[in-house]
Length: 577
Image (cartoon, rainbow, N blue to C red; front, side, top):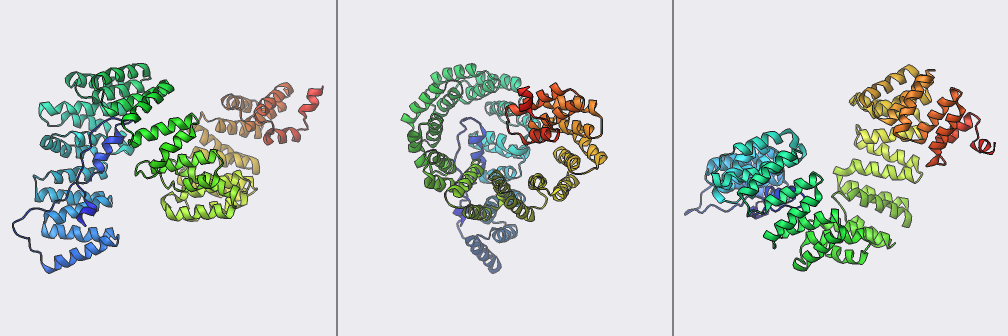
């Protein structure tokens, strides 16, 4: 059971890829080793402890981690046994319970203040809690004792989602960290990485250059400097730097891979050539094979790409991506059954919704809408954390295939599960209005505004729909004005401001707003409004010009055609004359 939750920590060498976090974050995902403490005699436990531990182990076997953690945690505090405490920490970490992880890591360190794994547990507990500043002293202690800087640098990857709130404090913490002089220099590397991430590129460049002067034999210095140069749009300088670094480190795989990736953004053929050379040496490298497959895909070399992607379907890291792109290849070749098969294997990652969308459309095309809907329902059960996204995706596809009433049913089901979701409410409001149900649209938009009074999109939408469907002009104008104050640069909101003024008879003021909106976004609806205002002002030539401009890219624009029909205007007759 111990091995299940706390495998031995593997060393993770810090070698930059496109982003330092890709490699460093693995260091924090690793768990500390749980080695049974060597004892000359077996430590006796009373019967109640043995019983509680037995119940905990049975709970673990059944996947009841909350129960197992509760019992191991209580027995760790009762017995102060190091192995039990380490096991409790392992379960807490597996459950990503930050509070329990920190509690057990602190107890472990208190029991054995010289145990490196206890320090590693503290580091990982603070990682779960996304507290990089508090994690750093434990990483520094490990660096002092073990001489390996990977965990020390890995602290820079903690709290990626909210790094901005603590990045300045973390930079200062690295600068103040207590390390011997020969190790202290490594903190400069971490500071350079954090400055680059914070967008302080000039200072980051200065710090990393200083590091390179002190550590000329460390490949990571040029790697980070190249990233900074690339971020500064100095791609040629970054490429030259990596070329020079390769002369000093010709066998460094990560450096050569970084060089190849950068080349693909500057000279695609040369980048492709570098990756092909890399693959000759590292045929089994999943990363190289995946990147090469993507380049082949971009060049429409589907056979070559498929050959590289097929083995990657068994990869822990690349399985979902490989299935997605294999689905894409079969889709392009109109082998729809294989495309569906591969798309269905994508159950996570950045391509999940795109793959699901394509499966839904292909099932409609090759089978039936019922089968497509059943597949989405199955996914909602399988990945409930993405339930809301799946409701939204399904409704949007149904709208696109002209099934608005079914889409409304799906949105209603989605809102039964996620009653306050802004995306679902807004989508249903817009669709309900299109289907003539202004009452439902108003209700949904008011729901959004009641929870988010500064939601400019909802304020504008409600105000504009009131202009279309009611005579509540003052109320509509107030809503639109609030939206305009929040987002004065939005073309849609500027258009609404103009139309509200027009509806209230302030035609010349309306013209100024509508001209601004049209200049920002020549949308058919804005063109329809602008043309009508010109027409009301008696400037028929400008009105016709506005409508023609709107029809240029949207020749069947309903908004413009219906406006002209209502005003009794025919462009064809005017062309004939």
